[in-house]
Image 1 (spheres, one colour):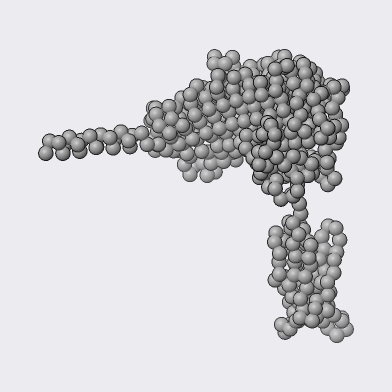
Image 2 (image 1 turned 90 degrees about the vertical axis):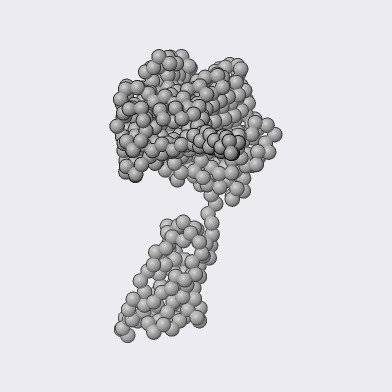
Length: 500
């Protein structure tokens, strides 16, 4: 009997220990920035993070139904520190629904050495990198561990050091930015209005837009990003970023050991002292660029788009460079001193604004397809580029387009149906017309009253009208996504004999 009791006790103890190690989910129920040491039915974001830090397991933080409508969490003067032993996933309700503000008095999040954090669905604003840690750097986020940001908006943050938005700064730290908007962040210190990557860190950026960021002081630069260490930037857009520093690089200031840029669009950035788009400032940089657009930037008169003061970059080909200027390292397949023919920065679908190549753009079907299946001979992107920044397929229209946006070919569709008389009898020889912005096409119904227009463009609005001596018909407006075969017409009224 004793052996049975002992065995049962051991089983129960193991079960308890196993359950205690299970992942926990903490729910944020309020916007107040309190910290009473517990996360129960009354739980702040700070309390939820503290509970996850103490749990020592792989935990999740979610938000209650309060956050189904827009809410703002304003921090009370200190940053939220993540130092969990397990992995932590913070899932916000959406960047349009949840804003976390540093109230311009503190950084918002610090992800410490060893912490593994995934964060999504929120806006971080009003962060101020005031901290004794890392010289007042990282306005919204200081990452020293492993951090993944998805569908986040990092906007309106500032620092007197480096990185108005995010600093990735520790030996071995890794920051991944997926489908985010990094906008209107400011560094008044040495570099990086938006994001800074440290020399021993790794940065991965996918499907993101960087706009309106400012590096306003110091000697390094990088309006949107100052890139040291290892970086992979894919399917992303940089526009309206400014570096007023002597280092330059309105969008990117590149000093890292290994940088690979694939299908990126860099346009409309400014640096009065060097390249408005990219400035390569170190001889130790292995800087590779493929299928990308760097054009329409404002920099030095001699080289407004790209400068490399200490050596050439290494083009992997099929880039469009608006003004090569003094930059070197381009190859025969690059379209040098060529206008990319882009539309304005606009909402073209997806999470952030992008530049859509216009009709006749040399970017269309001019890229290397090896990025779609990672068969490039060297310096492939981290993952296959099967979609553009917005999620549009890159496999449906011949070659990959250059830049972050793929122009999908117009899908042909048909619109047809039948025209009837007032008594439900098929009406032959009725004149049916279809009209869009390009003009009008006509079709006479056959002996069974059928009509059909082939080769129309999916997603285009058409007005379909019927003209007949026998009756009057009300026009119908359609925007076909697929073939339509049942757009039928019945008379609105019969015409009198003297109206026929």
